[in-house]
Image (tube, rainbow, N blue to C red; front, side, top):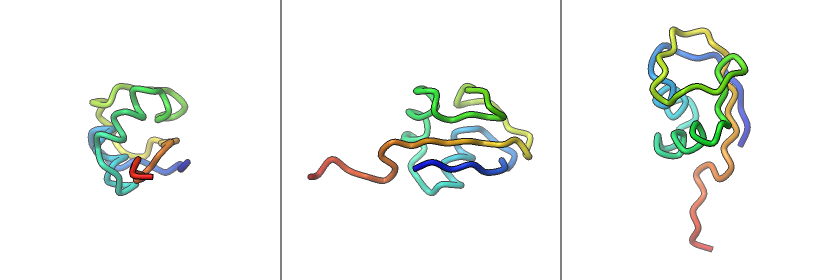
Length: 68
């Protein structure tokens, strides 16, 4: 899953998880992997967004399980 959106104010991991409807832990893994960008820059999961920043997210296995 790949998506870009305008941020709401709040903590980066929480804002992305709420916007995409995925678990926060999944977003935290993506942030650690460098696949979540804020205005083109990877930042820490605890970064405080003021709102209006451009968020770009690439999640490899969004919502998928390994039950195959």
